[in-house]
Length: 485
Image 1 (cartoon, rainbow, N blue to C red):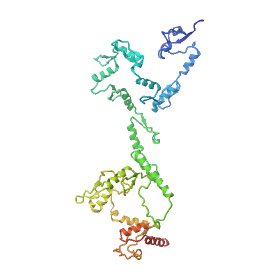
Image 2: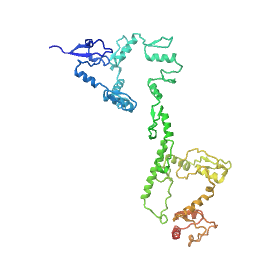
Image 3: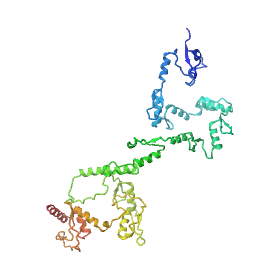
Image 4: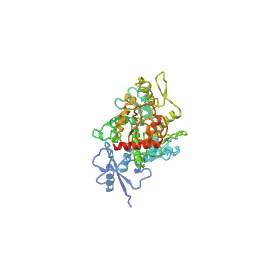
């Protein structure tokens, strides 16, 4: 039986005369063990399509045609296999699905993981051994062994190209070190940036590659809707973030805030939590049954600024029980109420009084030292107090003298539920109790809407302690009389 033969065609850079016999290598179907043609890499020979080639060879060549292109804008990479395209796309997304089981390092390709895994094996597992006497070094690849063998021969393939130097080195890193130490300014590192106008250098090629990306003027772009038409590009991440803060600052989406902006996303998130808590507070208030505060035996609870939702920070001092919406507010309360800290000191030399809160010092200055009100005070500790009314730095004389309160009281009197203190006509509140009427005939401008508030006002301002039932009866009669008019 005649031995069958296989035909392998070698690719040539320039086709010689039309003599295909020179390009055809006839091999036996059972080659000798000393030569295995299929052990060579694709770089040594490739199958060429000729008229006499078999149909199976043409099919293989057709399958190798690159037809899988990267869809990312600006990337022109094309691959012959979808698996190669998937590996390339991971370089855009940063996905590293191949994880080392020993050190948890992640890689883009499985081949990279396999190459890394060999670093955890002992040196005895390296298959290629140097045969030089008294050497015995082992390597993972034949290429590394070949490079190492050249050292034993004394060859120095890396030559310095600087004029008048002529030195040669056995390894590339030795040439780089020589260039930095002899032919470069002091302090230059082995890997230098070749970009025009850039004199930076780096200790590793990885750091150099990362630096070269900063010279790409279109590395980052803004994807906000308002910028899609102009499509601005930025060379650095810092420049993009500066653009986002100035051109697209964080803005509250609620219409009642009128487009309030913030310097950072952290401030916007904290502000949006306030809106969420207000919505929950409104729903809870709507679900609670309405009760008449004037006839209720229980003392009405004062509504706190900021509401009741979200007060998760509770003071742990025995007997206190106050709660706050932030850790900072709780810390301020503990420092002032329980530790006695008074950081806001009156600058007047003859006074030297100290206060726990800035607005209390401002109130003190407005009443006792009017000339010191204009002085702007700097907070030693930023306040975040929720149980105290905020006061602006600028004071109005009407606020100090009470004119503003009088104007607001007249506006409140337009409501059917609002009533005014009857002083000096306090005889209806005496009843059978023999108490002296408070001195003074000036009309009191205090306006209230709850009988509880009137009772506290009479006791604190007019020194008249009246029974709850008497005050409730007077309030009901006054409201009926006001409604009938």
